[in-house]
Amino acid sequence: MSDPVVRPFRRADRDQLTALVNAHVCAVVPGWAVSVAVLLSQLERDPGQYVTDPWVVARATLVAEVDGRLVAAAHLRRYGTGSTVAADWRDAGEIAWLVCWPAHEAAGGRLAAACVRLLDSWDVRRQYADGDLPTAATYGVPDSWPHVARVFGSAGFDPAGGRTEVVLAGTLDGVRRPVRPTLPGLTVHRTVGTFGARSNAVLDGEVVGFVEAQDDHTRGGTLHRMDGWADLAELHVDADRRGQGIGTWLVEHLAEWLRLGGTRRFLVALGEEDLALEPWFGRFGWHRIGTTRRSWVRQTGRPG
Ligand SMILES: CC(C)(COP(=O)(O)OP(=O)(O)OC[C@H]1O[C@@H](n2cnc3c(N)ncnc32)[C@H](O)[C@@H]1OP(=O)(O)O)[C@@H](O)C(=O)NCCC(=O)NCCS
Image 1 (cartoon, rainbow, N blue to C red):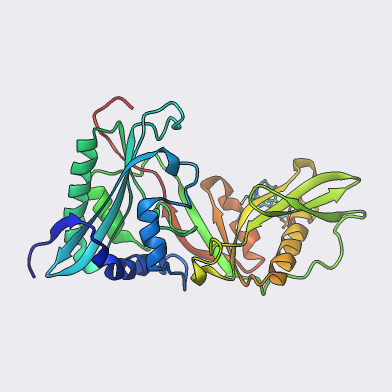
Image 2 (cartoon, helix red, strand yellow):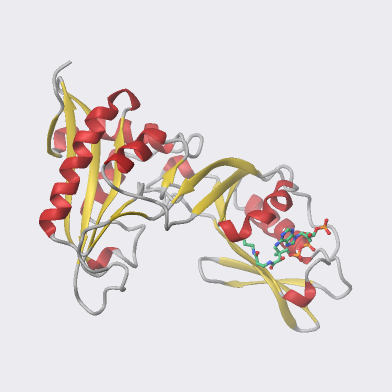
């Protein structure tokens, strides 16, 4: 086997790149995959990052090749210095994602070193690394990508200051139908929420809790392998109303609504502060499929 060659991405790499990316995607959520078109479009502009993407001032995609085969790839972004850019992102650079075949971890390491040289040449104040492939469930470094974690670690990125999230998944089959309200007078009222349809629990004319899911991970049809999946976006019951079954009843209503629209499978991401809720979500049939470590940072020597 010859030494890996690191070079800029070329359009002719697109099929091998997509296969490599999808090997990483389907290790996070079963059956998920992105198309060539979705992947290529993320290299130009990321529709999934509608807040941070407008701050990007430069992008680069590098690949590592061994004996003519693409074995590793990485996408980098540089963020602007303007006052509209949020403080954490101002004058920052990131490896938005890096993927490599586990058998070619050495090539991944060579590629990461090239990425760091590029970030250094951009002279950014902060350097981040992430696993931000264009799906809703790929962010941070999932525990199913230990080779990527090692490559980032060897390149000087450290997740110590970051967060770990737990990902639960399951079908909607185990969620009971909402038979009767848990409290007399409790009703459900649907409104437009932060991300889509919100189911509100209303008692004596007041909203005492709400739940919301994102139920189009296909982004209008472009990510068709995500069809039938939804994830929990928001869930809240007023503190003085907790423990009376309202949360469970809201989830049952949500599941009923989602089933009507064709959703069959469900994801829940739990931050460290919500981990105690894992058994509660387990009651609906949603169990841990992985964890992900967020916010990998490399010290630059410039004041943070
Ligand atoms: C999670 C939440 C929606 C549950 O609502 P609820 O109306 O109290 O839920 P239910 O009455 O149906 O279920 C209560 C059960 O959940 C358990 N539970 C609720 N919150 C819990 C928590 N933070 N940690 C552990 N268990 C919890 C209760 O112990 C109770 O168990 P029991 O049935 O054995 O007595 C509510 O506690 C809440 O709004 N929490 C703050 C926001 C939040 O954490 N949202 C979820 C983000 S992923």
